[in-house]
Amino acid sequence: MRTIAVDEIISNIKEMCIEANHYLTADMEQALNQAADNEKAPLGKQILNQLQENLQIASNDMIPICQDTGMAVIFMEIGQDVHIEGGLLTDAVNEGVRQGYTQGYLRKSVVKDPIFRENTKDNTPAVIHYDIVEGDKIKITIAPKGFGSENMSRVFMLKPADGIEGVKEAILTAVKDAGPNACPPMVVGVGVGGTFEKCALLAKKALTRSLEEHSEIPYVREMEEELLQKINKTGIGPGGLGGSTTALAVNVNTYPTHIAGLPVAINICCHVNRHCVRVL
Amino acid sequence: MQENAQKQERHRDIMDRYITAPFSEDVAKELRSGDYVYLSGTIYTARDAAHKRMYEALEEGRELPFDLKNNIVYYMGPSPAREGRPIGSAGPTTASRMDKYTPTLLDLGMRGMIGKGKRTDAVKQAIIRNEAVYFAAVGGAGALLSKSIKSSETIAYDDLGTEAIRKLVVKDFPVIVVIDSLGNNLYEKAIEEYKED
Image (cartoon, rainbow over all chains, first blue to last red; front, side, top):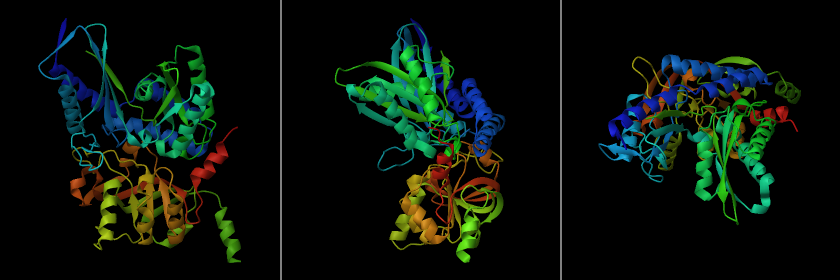
């Protein structure tokens, strides 16, 4: 049994919220650079160059990459041999978010009630997903999620007979419908299988996977590659203003499902696909 | 004859332009879908909650917090400014959420909008009817765009925080004409151009 104090969790989450909103991971930056080199449309290329410059300004001047610094989505993978001391874990996570967003000059985008919509003024609560794993560590992944792209995400409850073609069709439909609204070039996170909520969670998690990694399942890997090509032939392009770079990656996660169903979730993220990982 | 001239104008090459806001319909009429525009002058921010409030004010016969006439509204809610800076990150938000309110505001004299993403046909018709313009700024480039904003002053609905109405002074703020006063739509045209099947 290893003991971790809530104070350590709070301070790490605070720093991670700030870090994620000012610096993209190396694989994201690399994918944008490559896209800027390969883009066919002159205006598309110009936009991609602006996005590169935007990343430079964000890190040099400590200005958030995007003004929508998101709702804080946090994956907590907790080793079952960890003992947490000093308070309630969920409170600690939210306190870290509160400190990160208020002290880090991040935008407060969360409203208390979906209908009455009063801003909570500190970006809490976060959306927290807990997972109990083996070991005596805590792995924290913070993925601030902007809503331009979140609003264009979809869940399809397909029939088993729709098969893999149905899945591909669903993904293409979501991407085409999203178009310029989701701030392309996008990263497309897909969850296939599970239940209604499980596939959405798989899709969200897929957005945190490195762009350089593919699924270990051969047919899924092929589908990821095929769909990326197809999406980049839609013409949507950077900013939706035409071009050959509409997505930077398609990441698909799968899970066992029920004999009667084929759930598919498509969680779209813009080019500001933020995440930050630490292991305590 | 006049029709011919208009037709020619419709097909002229896209170009870089420098214009100052607010501006009249005469300036808006010159802009064409695809033009790259550097905007200077004064613009106003308003997004979801501010639009709802302005719409309610109009329904109740009250005055709006600023005169819409010839003005440009930027759909944007910034992140907080660090000390010594006018504003934080300041890129566009998705315009379609304002579609419900936009025709009314255009009919009241608003000259244009800066946002990102698709608009409804009702918005397009109101743009044509009022000789207005819909610009896109690059979504997700809020740090870069903030450099073109020289000052920011909250003029109404302060309690809405990031969603308050702000008066911005901008210098060479980069935007692209998406829907022009003839109803041309760059999102539709550009996709067709680069689609491969």
